[in-house]
Amino acid sequence: MTAFYEAVGASLEIDAGAFTTCLKSFTPNSTAREALDKTCLSSTDNKEFKAAKLADLGEFQFVFDWDPSIDYFDDGDVHTWKITYPLLSGQSTAATEEFTGFITGVERGAGEVDSLIMATTTVKLDGTTYTLTAGS
Image 1 (cartoon, rainbow, N blue to C red):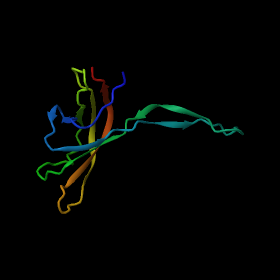
Image 2 (cartoon, rainbow, N blue to C red):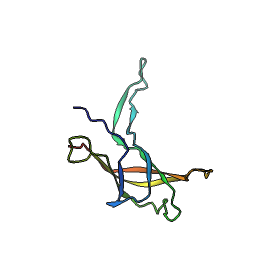
Image 3 (cartoon, rainbow, N blue to C red):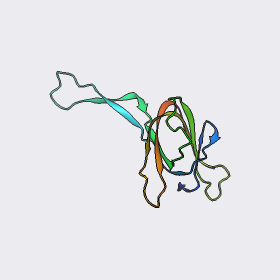
Image 4 (cartoon, rainbow, N blue to C red):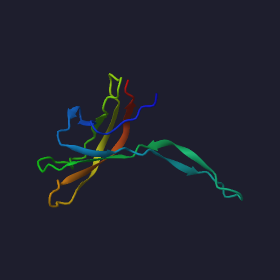
């Protein structure tokens, strides 16, 4: 059976502690691998490429209610980030996505009438830990 997940009910932990600010949305990482050009100068046809061995795990973005008492742009330390997805019908264990990374940017949204100020934090995965565990 194919599992379809929704973000509503998902939670975020940083360094095994609950993230207390209201998480509004997140954008998962996009993994990329370089293509290495292995074309010889003597080639007269097509360029030739091979896949690099190392992948770039990319970045996550988190959007949440801005809280001026929190220093979102910390000292560049690597933290463990864990997203727990809501349980699906019939599951006893939730799906999780856990990785290590550091904050590379914080952007505060506009202050407008009748709206909350949001903050977007960008986290660069450092490449040492990334685990996606399916719920069961």
